[in-house]
Image 1 (cartoon, one colour):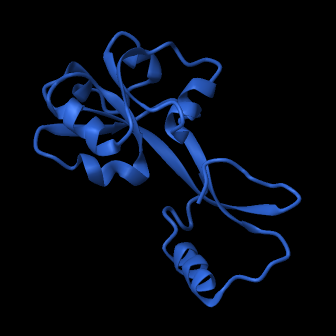
Image 2 (spheres, rainbow, N blue to C red; image 1 turned 120 degrees about the horizontal axis):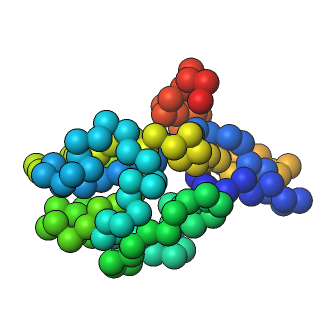
Length: 153
């Protein structure tokens, strides 16, 4: 699974799903009252960033009209983001596929309203190579349980 379309001479990428981005903050934070905040709403808030090499961070920074974020900390793991947000140190933006980390007392998540706040994910494999039985089973299982199967986002 990859957050970039890795179509090359040796690799082929097959669209897998769209992963929407969500604000995560404490339930007592002012942004928690907004049903669907925008990136502009987040501008002046202390922000817990994922590391520069994370696909979420790269996606956020690649958006031309995105306001600069007030980065307080840069961390490697979603569990660390959760802990920092839960402690009241700041807010963050996380992908929908990672929301299970943030089902915690005192935390809320809100979908970002900005129309382009989704990233596409791809299944990537070598071109002109058959998959092993285990890889084929994984591929079939992933497609069967694809998030949002049947949606037209």
